[in-house]
Structure formats: C-alpha cells, structure tokens
Length: 147
Length: 140
Image (tube, rainbow over all chains, first blue to last red; front, top):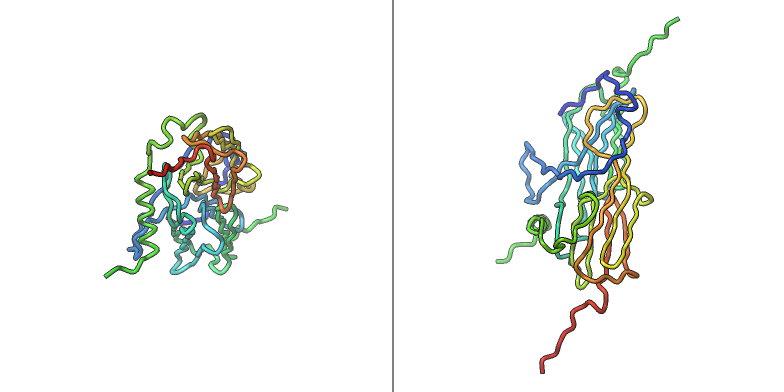
C-alpha cells in the first residue's frame, strides 16, 4: 500500500462517526511477502489513515498490546509496525467457547517521499495505536494570499 | 530428547485450541439478545469462568456491565473521531453502540463478579457459586 497525500477533502458529515450498531469485523491473518521465522499466526490491525494539512495519521487497533510491546520502525521507506500481546496472561485458562483468535499484530506501509521520516510519533490508548507522520516541509501546501 | 519449549510453539498451540472451540456448543442457546459485537472468548479457570472481550478504542467510562443470575450484559459505545478538514484515505475502523447479553450455563456468585479493562481488552471474572460447584464423593 502506498501512502500518498491527496487533495481530496471529505466534508465533515462524511467522516463523522455515525451512531449505529457495531458489527464484528473478523480479524485478518497477515499474509506477508517475507517469510516468518516464528510459527505463530500474526494478524493485520484494523487501520484508519487520514491526512491533515501537515501530517498523515495512522490509527490502528491492537487490542491487548501494551505500550512496551509495540515496535515502530522505518527502513528503506517502509514503515513497519508490530504489536505483541502478553500471551502469558492466558496461562491456566482453558477455552470453552471462542469467537476470535489472538496473536501478534503486524502491518507495513510504504512511505512516499513527502513524509519526514525523522518526525514520526506514536501514542497508544485503550489498545489503539496512533501514529502521526509529519509531512516534509517541501510537501506542505503553500497558501497564496489574495489581495 | 525433549525439545526446548518455545513460547511461539505454545502460542501456536493455543491459537489452534482457540480455533477448535469456535462455535463450541458450551453456551448452548445461551447467546441471547443484541448483536454479536463485541467478540468474546469464554474460558474456564479452575471452577470459575473468565470472559475475555476485545474492545479496542472503547473507554472504560463508556462500558456498562450488568449481571443478573447467570446472564451478563455488556453494553457501550465506541467512537471514532477525526479532526476537521481531513482527507480520509482508508477507513476500516467502525464506530457505534453495542449491547450484548450472554448467559452462561453455570451458576455465578453475582457479588464476586469483577471486571477489568486494559489496552482494549475487557476481562470479566465470574466466580462459580459455591452451591453450584460439584461435590466430591468419597468412595468407601
């Protein structure tokens, strides 16, 4: 997936959270181009991506992942995010009935050159990771005042 | 020779166990009113029942848990907010309200039920009522 700033602006009504009954979104298993060296399954975090004037924001749902267990790194213009769950919490628990599976979360994004790779910040709240990717100065919109 | 136990092997094994209990009949027809959100897993811990629910992005203050007899009701709302003047590139997260009730086929000690919510995971601890516990009979 490529992250390219676009000029299409949605109206506020478009993007406001509508009040509706929530449906279950089945977790997607990660299909990676790279081979994994661990046998356990990984899942793709549900992600929103939006752009403001000076930044691109990625919001990812990673339930069960603690602050200390998130890795965010950029290599060769690829932003890679991994979130690990604390599997030891399940010790002594015997499943009776299940509706979802658990596992680590991982997802990668190719960054465009409009992102300043030195200014990426991350925040984790209630199992939701928010990454703010500041745009490079050259990519910022220039406003021309009309006299 | 015994293999060194690998935490990832243990995780995979657990993932497979979780798959096995998908649509298990343990809850029977107990799954009642409301939708299927949020997804939950039911476990046994000794005599007690533990329900673990995924609620990423739901704040503690927006959760309501009620217990009556052996029915647990989980209700709440999840909001997804963006600022003004944003261009949305990808939208996978959903917002909305939920209300779900689950009836477990064991008797619960309602006064000792506890709930904990951390990192988008809600855990409900449902101790089995003392009088519902199986009694061991000594064979003479």
